[in-house]
Amino acid sequence: MAKVLCVLYPDPVTGYPPAYARDTIPAITAYPGGQTTPTPVGPLGFKPGELVGCVSGELGLRPYLEKLGHELIVTSDKDGADSEFDRHLADADVVISQPFWPAYLTAERIARAKKLKLALTAGIGSDHVDLQAAAAHGVTVAEETYSNSISVAEHVVMMVLSLVRNYLPAHQIAANGGWNIADCVSRSYDLEGMHFGTIAAGRIGLAVLKRLKPFDVHLHYTQRHRLADEVERELGLTFHETPESLVAACDVINLQTPLYPSTENMFDDRMFEHVKRGSYLINTARGKLCDRDAVVRALNSGKLAGYAGDVWFPQPAPADHPWRTMPFNGMTPHMSGSSLSAQARYAAGTLEILECFFEGRPIRPEYLIVDGGKLAGTGSQSYKLT
Ligand code: NDP
Image 1 (cartoon, rainbow, N blue to C red):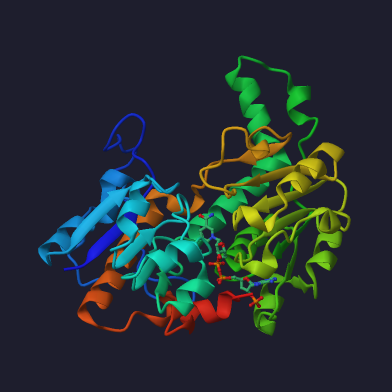
Image 2: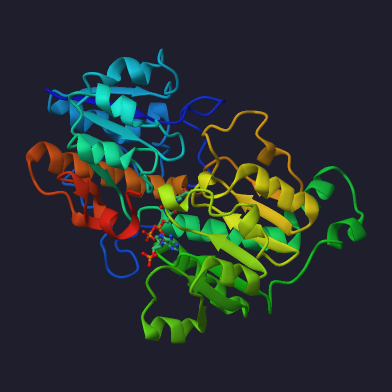
């Protein structure tokens, strides 16, 4: 019998289940490029479209795990030595956590988790796990690659338009009973004709470029490996060798690299020196890719005209985190990859990975981040240990 320790975000403040706005979600069977959506043997312990990412939703895993006689602990209490997470970690075989409400699996915690064999991310982005320590302790790390990539890409497009067109302040004026159009439009522009660049054009970054193409913007990207010629031609992409070159050329910048030691603080005061005055920066990748206070300084000085994103450090962000109140921000809690549509896919993918793990079948390489003591599968393409 295995112990599965699952850390999920808390239930809605109004109680569980919520009142749903819709009865169904579209059935998606494949991602761009042909990878199939999760294929667990099943049955699923939930109806797609239900809120399963929070504690009472349990990712729909309880029926499957209890039928096999495994123990499932689900909690949102994850921080501090007295947390429920820490109390159960010592004899957990599997930890499931989410980027939205990350149970930080530090090297010290991994050293204490003597029985841990699988650290599963329900979603994408396993930087809350110390990958080096996981590799050293023979812990497999896996995530549901592609499960919420399009969800995030849609969110980025929304944030680009919201910032450039000054949507959020204008909505607030209407909601407050006002009608001063001059106030609404004094910072409102068209996106058409602007230069948009993404730092990383992987699953999400490329999906953003494809979605912005019909807006008649000039599209730019940078990453370590160039995209295929036909993709560059089809989208009319300008490639930059470095992020510094890209930010100097663009009006709107999207940050989409994974977080690993050498991408931490990529946007610091030094990087902002290369940014054009009045640029917009979108970051749905990871909060630590940006120096927290450098972002605030850039907004206050006018270097940035706006900053939007849903990723912070730490998470949950403390009430006095300056990104909650800095000027011209369009921040949300970490939600872009946890729409009800995305949850259906990452919960099904979590079940698929658990089925493979308990039945001794190989986990799809596209889901693997660390395996056999080293980066593996998608992990070896998207991450570095240094
Ligand atoms: P992918 O692995 O598909 O793409 C990552 C891209 O980053 C690759 O194309 C890689 O290209 C590029 N890259 C890696 N290192 C660098 C670097 N140092 N400089 C420039 N480019 C780099 O990941 P996804 O697009 O699916 O996701 C990206 C990140 O988004 C995740 O790691 C996660 O942190 C975040 N995310 C956030 C979510 C949310 O809810 N807000 C949900 C899902 C993901 P190359 O190797 O050529 O450099």
